[in-house]
Length: 336
Image 1 (tube, rainbow, N blue to C red):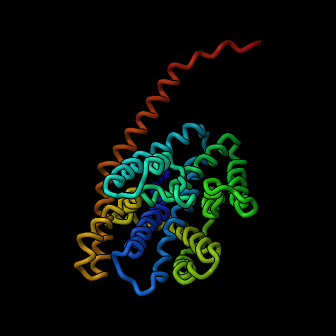
Image 2: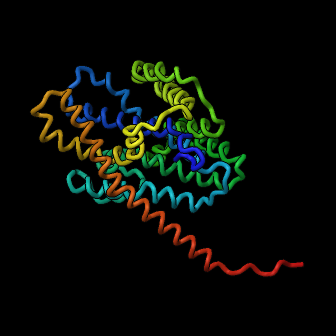
Image 3: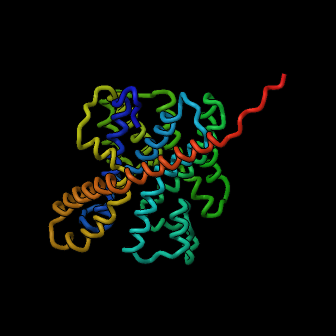
C-alpha cells in the first residue's frame, strides 16, 4: 500500500488496519460468548473496527489510482484477485465446520452478494459471517471502477455523489430487502476515506486519544454519524499526521500485513476456544489466548494462503495482459 518512493508514506494507515482487525476479533470474543462481561454494551464499541476498515478502503482506492491512468476492468480484476481467493478458501473451510447454511446462501456468499432467509425474507449473513462487509466492499469497487472512466478531476466527485445518492435513496424509497441492503449509510465511510486521500486531510495527532474515548463512550448512545462516523474520521485524520514520523515496528507491521487474514480466519480460533478452552479457564486468560491464537493463525494463513494466492492471481493477470497486447492488431495507417 505504501508508495515505492517512500515506504513509510502510509504507515499510519497500515497500523490502523491491523488495529481494526484486532478490534473485530476482540468484540467477537464477547459477543460469541467466550468471555463473560457484565454489560455487553460496554464492549460493543470494538465492532466499529469495521468502520475503520471502510474509511481505510476508501483512502487506499484513491491513493492507489490517483495520478495515473487506471483501466476500470483491470482495476476490478485486481481487486477480485486481491480479495476473492482467501475469502473463498475461508468460506469453504468454514462451511465444513459450520451447520445451518444452504446452497443458495453459499453461492451468494462466494459471489459477494447478500441472500434472503427463506423463512423470514430478511437479508442474512454470508456463510462466513464477517463476509458481510465484503459485500459492501465489492459494491464500492464497482462504483469506484465506473468513476475511473472519467477524467481524474471528476473521479472523486462522481463516486462520492453516487454513494451519497444511493444511501439517500434508501431513506425515501421503499426498496426490497436486497436492494435496501446496498443503501446502508456505512457506504458514506468510503467517501470519508476517499476525501482524506483526495485532499490530503490531517489533524494533530493529539486528537486521536479523545476520538477513541468518544468512540468508547458515545458509539452506543448517540446517532451513528455522531457516535461512530465522527470519532472514526478523526482517528484516521489524526493518524495521518504521524506519517513520516512513525518507526516501522515489527509486530504492528506484521499485523497490518495480515489484517485481512486475521479478519477472515479468527472465527476458527474462537470456535476452537469456545469448545476446548473457554469452559475451563477464567475470562481474562481466555481473552488473551484467543487474541494470541487468532494472530498466530492469521500470520500462518497470510504466508501460506493469502500471499501465494494473490501472487498467482497477479501473475495470471500480468500474463493475460501481455498476451492481449501481443495479439492486438497493428494500428492501420493514419488517414491523411
